[in-house]
Length: 150
Image 1 (cartoon, rainbow, N blue to C red):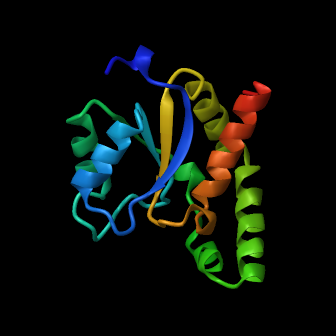
Image 2: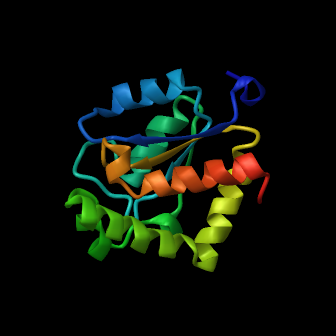
Image 3: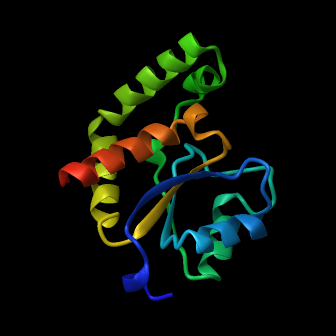
């Protein structure tokens, strides 16, 4: 599908419990033009989901791959996303502070600008987006799109 016919915007997606073929098909069905990987380290024990293999699988169907390390969640903050409601709130607050850093702000601005013309999917492992830092990335990009703030 030509990029001009793809709907713009941003969505989040996790690959937990998925195989690479069905994952790629889901991206195609959602008309995603670019997958933005926000894992700090883009490696996986799941076949097809490490950086090089994922990039190759996506390239085969015309989806661009982009790794944004500056949007990764530090290892020390990950457990909170799986914890109690209080731990989750603290982890989200800590990650929100990371998004306020200049490098992360620039990345969010670039994604918001790109999302005005193409559909972007923000990737991490966790199936439940509310339990993943990508939720904050998606929310911030969507907020900037709504405000035209990039």
